[in-house]
Image (cartoon, rainbow, N blue to C red):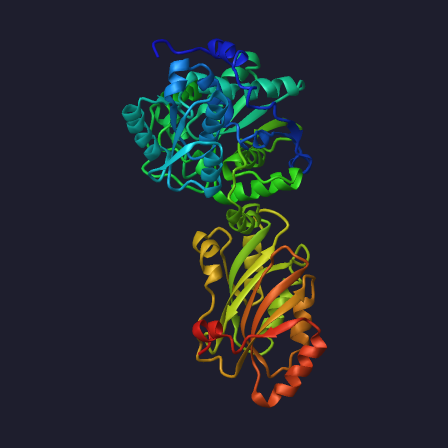
Length: 514
């Protein structure tokens, strides 16, 4: 490019962009629950509802619609983590052109299959967008294809800018800030150019993952910075090096940059689901996570914010991880390692303490325990909280009552791995019986279990994790002498909780039985 385009130039390109042959004008919807919680009006720009479940088809089609008939005949190529790929594939199908798509090997399968379904030829290469880009440039030369850049191209930027045009047309009242996810910078470049040309008083705030913040670092350094590595949870924004043009625009026009972490994004995915019953991908939830962070930091009330939900191409099997981390991300769940004396009644005393915590009783979300020491027991406990910052106070309260505890709420090792690994063989677990129970998911269910137990029966293993259902699945190890078999059957009958005896299960014998 010989001369940098000004916002007025981009305004003209945005107003004349050719996107509506493939894109729809997405809705701008209020997030009623989130707005009520934050005491600010939050509007969601539903780009997750585009035909390819992402905004990317806007820029891709606008670029390709400006190509010559000869270029379209030879075909196009792009490098993409997935959403731009689908945009290019759909646009090529619409325009009758061949499309070669180079994708990182880390791309979710749902995106790969979607590109193939649209007629795109998929080439998998490298671990990130930058790796895929190098391969695409090589194939572009070898096969004389036209490269359709996912972000660093004025026509692509203008196509994405039509989102801002729609936002300002759809919302006529006061608007304080628009929050925009940043990968390579194409979306925020288009949005910032339009908003600063038409309504310069509106703040444009860019959002990145804390492990993929190439744009924020580049602007801080006043030059483009290449990241050595990028986090892949938000694969749609996993870019090591931002574009030249997008860097120039973001540096000049973006008011603020924010970073959010994985737990905050998981919590934001849940927030979007609660308000819309739709599930966005991690990149699609970045803006919502940032709004929550912005409100908490600036103590704002009564302002109006727009979050662009930029994509919804989520692999279904990732939902398990998202659901698990969402509660911790919102700090609606606190995790602890608690040491209790290995003596009769201490387990019950600890459970009673949980029910008598300051601020009201808490639901137990997880409980992992395996007998390992004759004098003390270490349990992994999850509890619901009433708000952020409570975990330290709960840990201190445990300590005052004689239960030494370690707050694990912000410990990545504990959240990711240790919670699933509590257990093992124990020489102390003689005469152990292993049972799976279904407990009703209500306060007092565990205390009922403990109250009906004979005092001489010792709990040697306990595993419970709240799964969001109206019942809980519990695994319990109990030391019950053979002479008490009749009494044990009576206990199970009186308790009335469905159970399965797993003592002879070979998995138990392999991993847990001494």
